[in-house]
Image 1 (cartoon, rainbow, N blue to C red):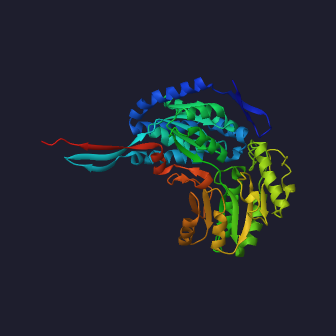
Image 2 (image 1 turned 180 degrees about the horizontal axis):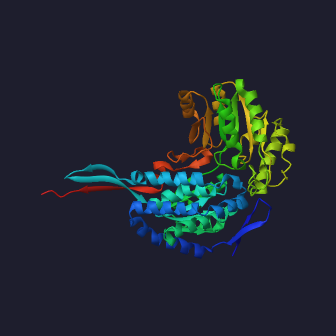
Length: 461
């Protein structure tokens, strides 16, 4: 029996460990989930919706435990109060649209025919959730999946080992039946074996590109539906008519919040030459105001990265870029807490270009590169010069221009004068190596159900 450990980035200690399930024990979890699903799906939709909302409310009551646990597991400062704002916003929104999203499409209802398309739950949904926003990313699928009549098996990343237990605890205490929502601890081999055996009707995975490839390989030939949200290298483009202060404030927050460990964090910024110098100067000042330190200290505004190996990748990318001519503008003396391990100072690089891995590969840390551009055409070419496509952030006062440019950007979401936010009314989706499928919105419900057509011809005398 293997053990999964969470090594805390706070002090390098083993914060939690759990035994993995054997393949037989995991199969038993899936069997119980499948057995419970039909009865769960037969419950009235509104009853399922209310039970999910009660589960979310119960988790809110556990904040005194959840918030410090998050700090210990993945390093986010307690100052930010966990993930409740986004967690609640998403839960409440999908609850508000569930009835409409699940409503049949009625084509004909006459004395001769009933013709309609109904939405039917897939069955057992497997959610493989990441450590960076472990509650919010998981609820994107858990809430609509359960509301739609699926049962859910949840597997969390080792870095946030306790999150799945907390979520299931909250939902079960709120009245969701035990076999309807289960948490599992699995190694990669057992996970792949379950998927390869066709154990699940739908798999939602958020994580690395390589992780997504493993999921696709495991599911090959099973026809299991997959939703994949993988890497990102999201760009910002600051046009000559942008609100400079707002652009700096939002883009720097988008680049560094959660120590830059955000799927849709801003990693590369293109600024029109007329605003470039001012944008760079203000950005360096903005980032230099962070207080790096122990995330359990309420004064800390930037915690450690989730693991020292993640920080190592960021340091290597920065060093490589500097060796090729980039300039690092944030003074390391401002951040004596940077210990060469998980605690990492934020950084802004200029004189960067796309020959550098720092501008091509996912950094996933509190660092961003800024390049000067002369035109929309130049910015567009640079924004599209990426293997990823999750979001793009455009800064202008002209919505028509943003819309026109947005249609040319290879991305899942186009923001204007915003960044790094999931609107639960819109579909969260990506292109290229960022993945496929989509969560949230009415489309999220449709991805977690299948259409069933009814063509009923009435006997006439």
